[in-house]
Amino acid sequence: MAAKNLITFRRVTIFTGCLVSLFFTGCANQQFTKGSYDDIAEDRLLDDKFNESDMRRIADFMAESLGNSALVQKMKKRPVVMVTLVKNRSQEHIDMKSMTDKMRVALIKSGKFQFTEKANRAEIAEEVDYQTQSGYVDPSSARRIGKQIGAEYFLTGEITDRVQEVGKEKYVYYKATFNLTNIESGLLDWTDEKELRKFYKKRSVGM
Image (cartoon, rainbow, N blue to C red):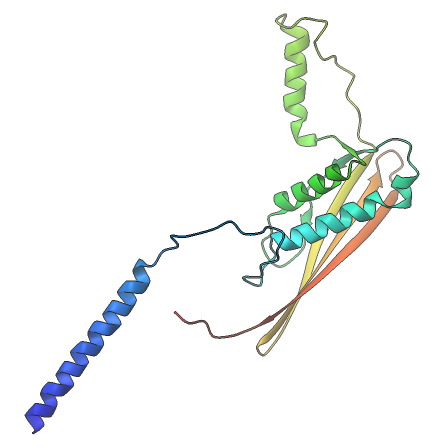
């Protein structure tokens, strides 16, 4: 009887071992093989990190706020703005280049601003030198030195955060602050802030 029980136990053990092995082998071989396009306008909070939805909310809010400000409304022509890299004062890694670009795109789409780009100055200067000094370009079509339009304003910004975690609950708070500074006078002509707060609840995640 004992021998029969031992054989049964061994069979059960081997069978269980095979199931476990198949389970982990199957998990190891799983891949994302079928996909579809998602609606980028929909919010997807897949983790507790700063994401593209946060960027969009901030950029759209700031573009509307600045575009509808008393400062811009009374201007007779579109102001020339230089957008500087948004600063990350938060505790997590954020792609600030993407945040800055999204802010610039939102402002350009409003049709109320003109922009100059500091990062392109070297390339522009090189091209102007080529057109005016190489002798290869028709002088009547060459871009001349001294014709660039100077920026009137600096647009600066920063993002800060605060995390509150108690038990299984977590709140993540972000604050984005943007400033428009008059380059000639040094005065702060406009500022606004956008607050975001997201709630998460910790739960067990299966295999």
